Length: 281
Image 1 (cartoon, one colour):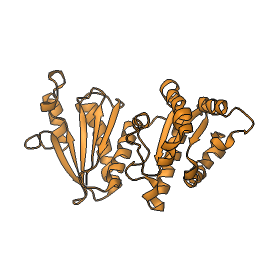
Image 2 (spheres, rainbow, N blue to C red):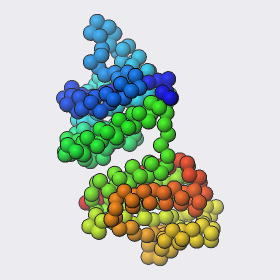
Image 3 (tube, rainbow, N blue to C red):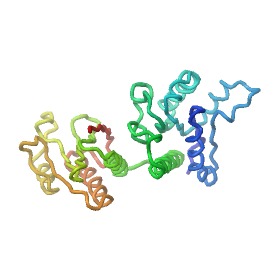
Image 4 (cartoon, rainbow, N blue to C red):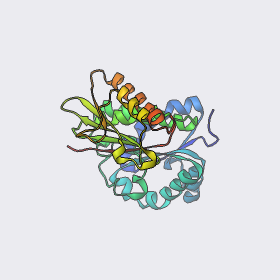
């Protein structure tokens, strides 16, 4: 069932019109199948109050897609007029903000934007990616748009799987991902070893937990049953998985991680999770 707010607002710099055109190709099937409205600045009537038109389009938007580049960040029209009300709509009305970093720029240093997670890795913008990888990102954008318009909630298992895929796609030794519960105490973290084609998984141990949150003996037994090694030189519970069949391993890890949060940490399968990633190389 479509959300009452069923339009998509797209903001981009003219210099990035090629990326905008490709985005339109990928969301065109959604326009056809769900009768959604897509708004961008080419829809502004030159005889009308352009500021009012932008404000009204933002108020109707369930999804806003921002194509981030140096040219985008340099535009006062966007940063001063479009961005503030968009962020207000996200905060107050639940509008979904999708960021696609199309070129190297000061995205991470732009506080109002960097608090949102980009669809792609900001360190690998579309401008440096091969065509096949760019198409995969546009497809992911279209999937996210459809999910938002249909008010379809992603499960934690799906979110973890997507985060792990991004970790692997970075392809850099030492890239890591931390999945942290809302209490900021319980976490599961992953280290990607590209040279060995493996992932080291760690579940937090009592050493890093406050007294009230320490693991019971039964909780520790559950981790051992999942083939985790008990803390020793590595101060957390840990295991290493060799990636032979990528889809199979990532699905296994995603399900295992949800199980840990639900059955070991006792926070539930649908507990709120934060995703923190970094890479070294």
